[in-house]
Length: 208
Image (cartoon, rainbow, N blue to C red):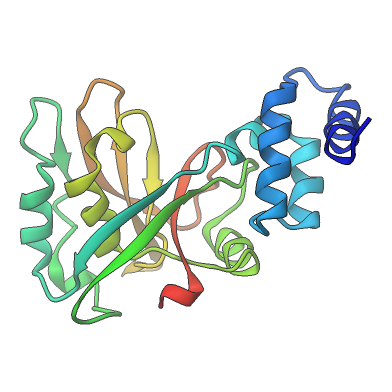
């Protein structure tokens, strides 16, 4: 048995006590992601305890987007098409004054889906994302994804926790919710909420 096969078998054996088991193909893909340095040992151990999270992890996808960080937020929203569908909605709190610009200019970045697979609050998620070599995406990058890659959001909740917005004693983060039928909603989620099956939008740190 070769080294990769042994690694796959070990992961399958470790997850044998759980209700939802990863397939051999999924674990093989996981091994590839580990070799690329995208998954750390501690993260792998956490996902082994939660195979649902492990399966979510290997579905992470990369999307190149061109982001004009100087574009007004209302133009980002208009170009994204969110709000045009019969079930689309834009939270009226998603306004320019709530999201100070972190970046300026126009450049191409690669945004990625990042899954944690267990319930964590936003500060913990940010720490995990940082340890993995990424930074959380900002709202401009979230909406750039919405403009270019509409289909990627059909059945997901995608969070841009790099753009927190303070309201009273609570901090909120923007996210796009897809209902599976092409309709999308841009909303603000409380940072204190515990997220499990949602997707974090991230950017590799070297792209800063």
